[in-house]
Image (cartoon, rainbow, N blue to C red; front, side, top):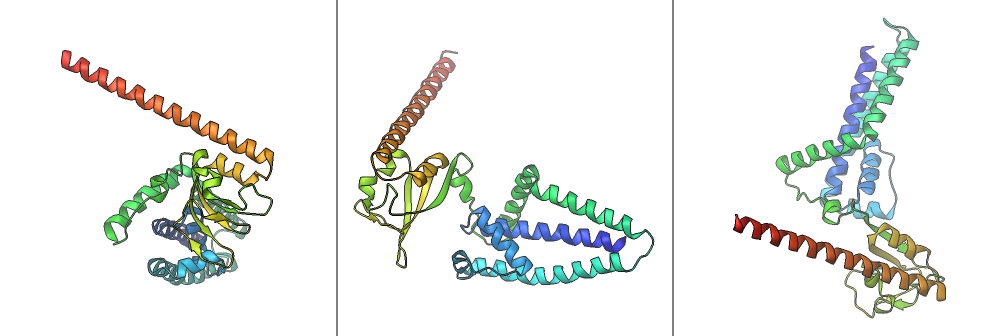
Length: 268
């Protein structure tokens, strides 16, 4: 039973290590999903050959994090296999069925903990505070800075010939009027354009890096050429104006309320 307990402890430590690495990679600019994928890939040693992995290994700090994960992962996997073999092959004390049940229950408990949003939220705060205090990393919560948890997101959009955006300049697309910002354009087999001008042309096979509300980005992804696409664009612009007007009204209401409160305090 001691070997089974040791295995569960090792698995728990492995989850904690990958969670710390995920947080560290997130602070270098990777999205949380990408950071989690890269951390687990490096820790388990399965390897990864995506284009994103090139940006990871070419980044000095990310490369150091992944190298540490690989070393810890190799040691953890060997220890886990050894503990599993000792716990199951050599029957000592409790029966095999009991040990299997304990192992299964422990793994289920770890999975529940790993998927708990409440635990993830509070653990992230602890990890971020520790990284900020004990490391020299420039800790920035990009998700909070960009309000990605408030309905906003960053997404890639692959442009096809049939898409409404194809062969339009940024000025013609009027995406800002819809509430969508273009952060960059990756040309097919060409350069990445990070500084955009109004006359920058959106070509088929381009990949756009967009920032905006999830619903707007999904609408752009589905929007095709022709009059129906123009109608959807005009509707999106009208909706954005309504949202902006609602925000201005809320700001004015808060401003008047603050002014009234200050006047009441002066009268008192």
